[in-house]
Image (cartoon, rainbow, N blue to C red; front, side, top):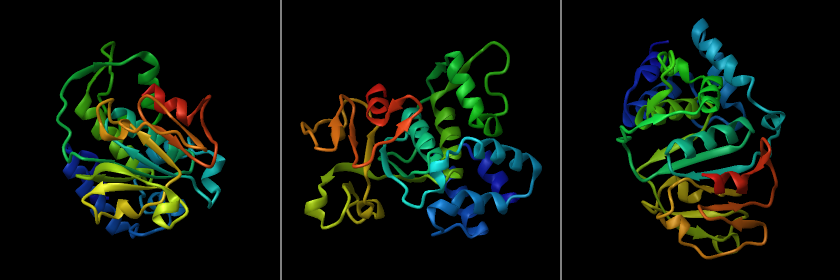
Amino acid sequence: MKEFNTFTEAHTCKDTLKAFRELSAKLGLDDIPHEQFFEKLKSGLVNWKIKRFLDQLQKRFTSKTLNGDATKVLVVGAGPCGLRLAIETAFMGCKVILIDKRDAFTRNNVLHLWPFTVTDLKNIGIKHFFGKFCQGELNHISIRRLQICLMKIALVLGVEVHTKVEFEGLQCPQKNGGTGWKAVCKPHNHKVSYFEFEVLVAATGARDALCEYKLRFENGTVTKQGYYISNKYFKVDKYSVDNIVFLL
């Protein structure tokens, strides 16, 4: 499909999001229930190479994906850590929204990757979007390219990515009149401001607004780099999510 090829070949954050919007419109994915997104996407793509890539991703989904009561996760920060955590929570069946105040990936620093990181990235299909990834003995990739590849994988899994959205604060459930936490964002009328979530992950670095709070919650724990706010308990492999946030 032409739209998926355009999405695969996009080289910037803006072009990637634009191409995915066009692909979603072509396949009728707009406003589809979260639990049905991946299967609907897969059924609309018939190319054998794309099918092989999607089959690789499907093997990573857990049984929790089938549960209609999906845990809702807000990830702040579209760096490699935020994107990779968004991918993992999507594999767990969570409804994931990721925001970043920037709309461009400009960090051309080259990363030297540990062997286990190379294996992990290959296992989630990075070579579909970057065929020359870690060929030979040189395990290097630029941060910008890594972000683009991870964002493409996240989008395919149904993660909503919104750029030019800045986190400013939290609204407690009893104050916003709903049942879940909400974020105060700029622009204030953005749809993310109405998203009620149970888990908030900061992947923004130590100097961002999200890390300035000095609070503790009955159902969560403030960590050095962010929050785990939840009335549900679930794990990413052997680490609980609050530990994952701390490790970022």
